[in-house]
Image (cartoon, rainbow, N blue to C red; front, side, top):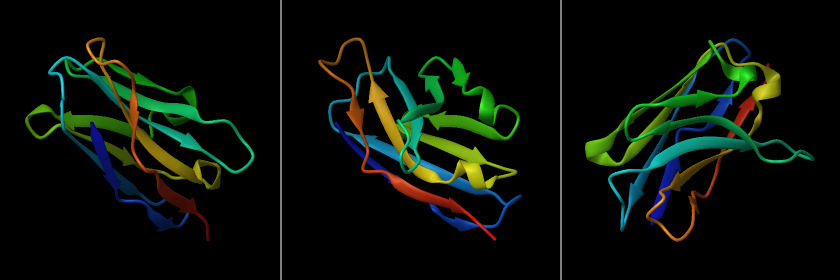
Amino acid sequence: VQLQASGGGLVQPGGSLRLSCAASGSIFSINVMGWYRQAPGKQRELVATMSSGGSTNYADSVKGRFTISRDNAKNTVYLQMNSLKPEDTAVYYCKYGSSWSPRDYWGQGTQVTVSS
């Protein structure tokens, strides 16, 4: 499984960005895709996940500001980030997992910087 993430960049506080992550390869139809982030000096943390069935999970810090969605036909997951704050600055990684897969897979990461 290969994951290609895109959409990061520099944005001012209060701004918006949309991340995309496309999965390719041996994709099982029942899976969970999601976003994690890692800020300098901190551990990687969950941002949001979404199952192929539509169930979602969000970190408390992003609830009400970020929205995860996916297009199962395209094996692509999106993260719409609104009302961005400087503390959202991090490298954002997408992840693919399935109970049928031997392991989880990670994308290469995309930098999100929120600064004035």
